[in-house]
Length: 162
Image 1: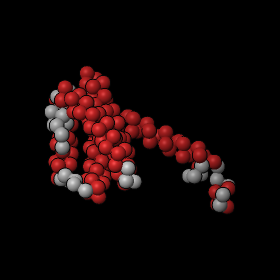
Image 2: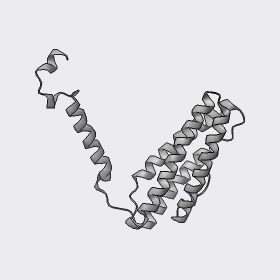
Image 3: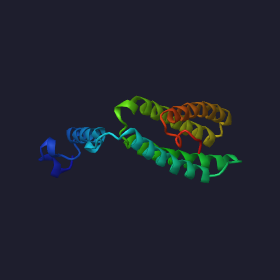
Image 4: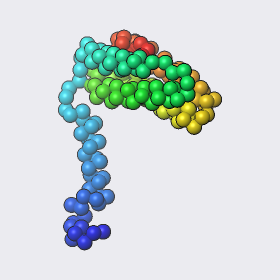
């Protein structure tokens, strides 16, 4: 420990486990509270979510189709980044209580799809195309389920493919 930190009480040492733990807890609390804003109406949720999904779908479509493994890696990597950004924006929305369970179920399926996409990218990057194909089939199935749930919730644009 540097000399200047030895005389500092543990609670004020910016590198102390206590300070870092308190900072993490505060960050979780702020994120969990959503900044104190109230829940959206169903119409607001549909409008905002569809706008997010429309932007995502446009960006993904602009990536084009991959015909080689290097292109596939590039498209999948960029697609994952686009999906992660959209997911963060969707998770920031506060659905009304009547839509919360269905909305969270849709987001959970999206998260599982993203996890499989990341694994598929890793498999493609390591040259394991059999594993890549297996993971893409699983991701496609989950993505289809997520789109169905989104469409049932009225998120018509989120229920479309990119």
